[in-house]
Amino acid sequence: MTPTGHLDTEACYRAVQSRDRRFDGVFYTAVRTTGIYCRPSCPARTPAAANVTFHATAASAHAAGYRACKRCLPDATPGSPEWDVAADVAGRAMRLIADGLVDREGVDGLARRVGYTPRHLGRLLTQELGATPLSLARARRAQSARVLIETTDLPLTDVAFAAGFASVRQFNETLREIYAASPTELRGRRGRVPTRGTVTMRLPVRTPYDGRALFDFLAVRAVPGVEVVRDGFYARTLRLPHGHGTVELRLPDSDTVGETATAEATFALSDLRDLSAASERTRRLLDADCDPVAVAAALGDDDVLGPVVRSAPGLRVPGHVDGEEVAVRAVLGQQVSVAGARTVAGRFVEQWGEPVETDVPGLTHLFPSSAALAAQDPEALPMPRARGRALVGMCAALAAGDIVLDRGADRDVVRTALLALPGIGPWTADYIALRALGHPDVFLPTDIGIRDALRALGQDPGRAADLGDQWRPWRSYAQVHLWNTLTRTKEN
Image (cartoon, rainbow, N blue to C red; front, top):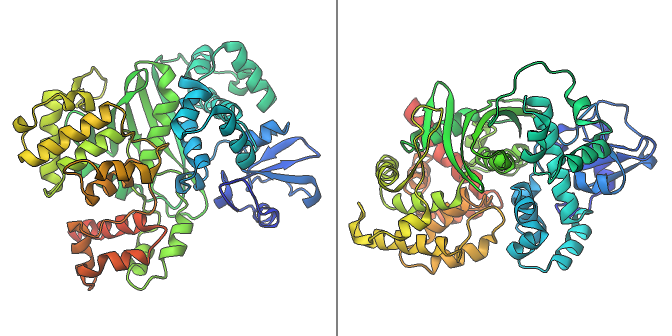
């Protein structure tokens, strides 16, 4: 099975027969005799092979005239891990559609971002995924709406616009077509009073999932004013397309293989139209779509890394909600400790961050924008002058749109553009790719933490690059496993 939609029918049917949850969200099973589509693990009786077809996306099944199964809720799954791995146009487009770009800028905006004409992009996605950009965006809106209907008390009118629909009529018609039920029927009888602007959602993640390790990674790097860690929760401010917001997260922690766990996320938004973007960016922070079983299969038998991987199943690559923030913090972290970089970032927030009112104690600012930092005198920044010049030059490129750091960017193009900037070297460019772009195959052989971890494992740090080559195409996960050994050593 591939991210291009060219599915191996026999392999798909075997996954359906075994009800293998690992394939939920990777493909969808459409049953001709019932007119519905399901996730591979649907508990219903397995249909005959002659009666099923397989689709790479829910939108493809919708376009073929199928309705979503009410029993297994096929769209209530993590997304396909292939979209994070794929660096092709289809993968980039899917990540941008998930972020709500089509709702904000239309198909023309999506086409501009990936460098194609709207017509050619439509042909390409139809060929690769079985659906047009509009159909894919429509499927995403329907999924977002169903989740909001069933898990929140938002008025249905607010749900419609929060999910990205242009009108309540379009909202009603789409849900009736896809789920064979009205929004009111999906919700049922609910008697509680809604809270406008605040939404609690359950974000699905693949298991095993090491939420504690991700929580610890975020906690030690939490920037005052922007991030708060307390009572098992991680919270932070969000800069969003239509305004600002906050998210409070309780991370799941599960050793179970092949199930779907959920992270509880509470969003407080100044504009509900940003809910789709906020939830998708939070899922990127969680690395929710990773297939940990595939990673473990690739790395678990390695002579050096195998024992480390087997002892920490479900470890994730920490993503981020804002690529430009990652880039700034990467430059601040050049040749300094994590604690030192956090302290300097806190000063930046206090001086140049945008104050916001929130209901979360300790969350007081948005991280400084690239435009605000680009306007500063590099000689006056609290860091070595060369690094200050590098920071201001990079922020100028980000503010001008010369470099775009989101999940729809071409990773190779971004790396080349970053390395062309004075003061931006491979470590900085690759760290940005790791956390901002979600690149699954990045390794930092000169990183101090990596060298210390290899030394502790009895390896020569000078061979880091050669060892990293053995861990393709999952070097980003190898990187995090090595970092994690240092954290576990300190705990012990």
